[in-house]
Image (cartoon, rainbow, N blue to C red; front, side, top):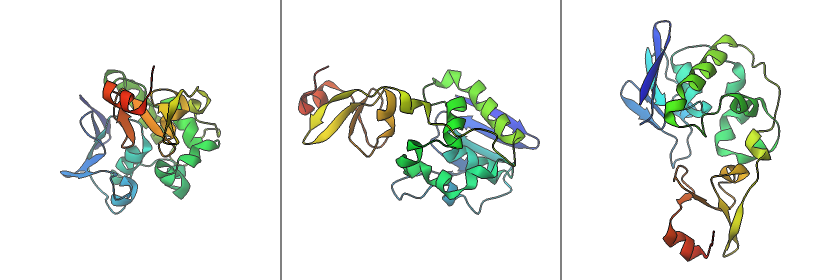
Length: 199
């Protein structure tokens, strides 16, 4: 699934098959090397078109806007905000980034429902290009319940599809219907049996 947003002579192309950015035929992903897309594309400018994953995650959206030289709030260039992608503790306190995701997150949406949210997010970022007029908030998911399924050799086993467990990627074993995160395990009967988990 794909759709485009025209920004004057520039274009953002959102593609559900991508997991990062594609600029001039080269894909940029945040992988095992731990280097963020933001840093991998730091010196890229003056592109007329950027293809990116179909989400409002700033890990790809902000580098895409920067590469197209589309102004966005300076807040997203602050190093703690950039590094929040690899620092779960960032979301343990209120932030403007959490407020942005509370309003524009696509994480729980099917691809078919994401386009209007993404368009709203891009328009919001463009219309507030020097400041981010949002209050500091806790991420809404922080207030959702966490379901602890049990323990395996001392490690907690979470239902990875609900609540704060989705953010605790370094703090336990997560079982989820979809293996979207590199530390989430696909939920199947064999694994449940091995871990001794009964639903």
